Length: 115
Image (tube, rainbow, N blue to C red; front, side, top):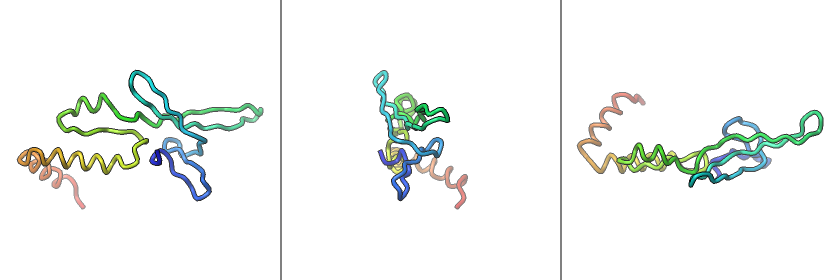
C-alpha cells in the first residue's frame, strides 16, 4: 500500500488527501467492497486524544468498472501503487483489440494533446 502515502526520510507518512502526517491506515469492508482511510491522531489543547479520518478510496471501483465493461479497465483508489501504469496498459490493450476503432481514437487524441 505504498501509494497511499509519501514517506519522508524521517519515516513520517503524509496523507495524499490533506498533506498532513498520519499514523496508520484503516481498512473497512462494507457490502463486498473494501475502503481505506488515513488515520490522523493528535492531542487537542485540553489534552484529549483526537482522531480524524481521510478517505483514501476503494480497493477497486466496481460501479465504474461496470460502466466501462467493454474496455476491461480496472479502476483503483490510492491503495494501488502502479494504477496509472495499469490504466495505460489496459487502454492500450483495449485499443489493440479493434485496430480500426483504436487507430481512430489515437488520431483524435493526437490532435487534442500537444507535446
